[in-house]
Image (cartoon, rainbow, N blue to C red; front, top):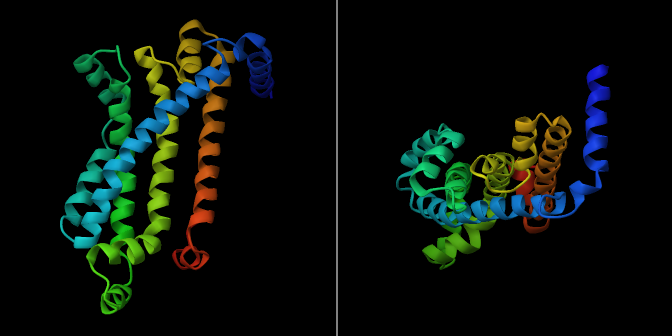
Length: 230
């Protein structure tokens, strides 16, 4: 149980230190930086992946290419991309961090959006066309509401991955909660390492809870039960 005692001691030391709650290095400031990086990367990924997934899922063209490309993109090492973009673009801006995060976030959103639209019952499509709706109307009024649980699931998976991976922003000298982990390892300040890691985990759990709430509010209960998505 010695490791438990040490862990709790480091937590108490980190969160009990008043210096960790104020200034540009304080928890509120680092949390806000982490949120800004994560939100920007996720927003850009949604802007790219959702329209593309909707178009491909609705037309049925290029679906296999999307799945293959997304699976290949998932295999890309985020840290390796980060180093590459830092070398190419320099470390004076946030883009060497944002670009790898966007590349990380796009595949789950793209695949889930595509699969969600593609998986809508063909009879439902036919009924919508039979009522006189056109392509864009069928997509917006029928297909998207039915596919929304899978789309949100893709966004939730991406958001959690981005929040966890934004820790690497500290490698370029930028802020975020990763500063506690990276700087803590560099200086052997294990209280900072443990405290920062716990904050990142709690932040990821909070993001998951937010998306679960959004799904509960926006998705029809009947659709959720049919797809068995929580």
